[in-house]
Length: 415
Image 1: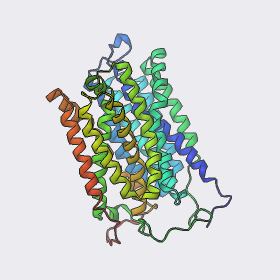
Image 2: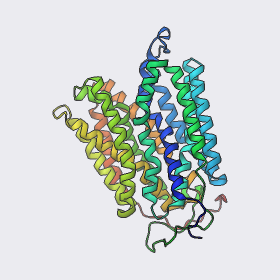
Image 3: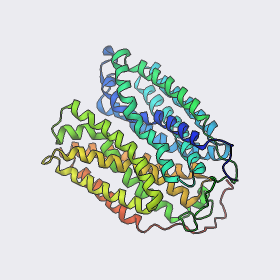
Image 4: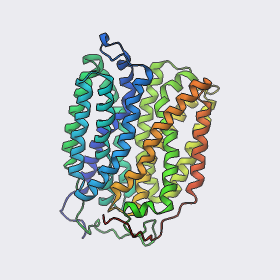
């Protein structure tokens, strides 16, 4: 079946970007940290620095974990129902954080419930995009997740103005309601193409990474390629999330910047994070996924190792932020595309959800490890070296990855 007047597939891209802009706002947590550390009398919760960091760590792991459930569900019922449900759950989480003013309910609302809502919703635009655009898979995944990277850039100043005007808890409520409404409405643009549909005038290339098979989750887990992809995804995300979680402190400590100037680096990182998703996604369509992954990990590894020169060359701080942000954004677009290439699109929701667990584990490990090294040694140097070595090791591993062959798994679920 070729493209006709069934549905304008570019409307799927519009819906995907709008949804991801709201989801990407989780990266603005640093805006909330200081207000939450203020005394209760001043409108905060009187949290310690470590307590104020916990909801962000928890939201990342619940986001990654719930993509498995949401992915499996949307593989069966389609993206609209799952994304709409996720949008409602997200709003509920924000409202719990807004109206139940305790640390416990902040963790439950913002960390757990919001994370579940994001996880349910996040995979839907990606899985829908790869089905509508087999001819532009890398680019479309990049566009679909670019909003996730750009969300922090757009929402952070708005959130800061709201906090200054109405306080931290009313800000949670306003953002929760607005995000939920945008996600629910935009999700109505997400729908799967008809069975057997292909773009008009497009013929699948004879030689491609696509295996020509549809792998269910059990079959995918039986392939060694899955574990290699998971490991190198973890390596790359660990490096990116170390920088995302410590961008401002690194600038202040190593480049001797004021907090206000270092804060600009957060916005710059968000811009390059978004651009990287489009740039590397498009590159992977022409150069190939594995070659692109090799280049991203190699470039990111060298960039983070050079962070140790910032003390002598402060200008490198800004270049390093741009490079790491660009590469981190690329991971979030190229890895979903290679999962679709290797394992098909029928079960892309749950299959990519299992791979995305690498991101969640990296979110727990990376920022925590960097903070511990700073506390133990007074320097980020060890964290930079470890992160750089992991990326370079990941680049080497990527050279050994080949498309999976047919695997017979008797216990494979019929999905």
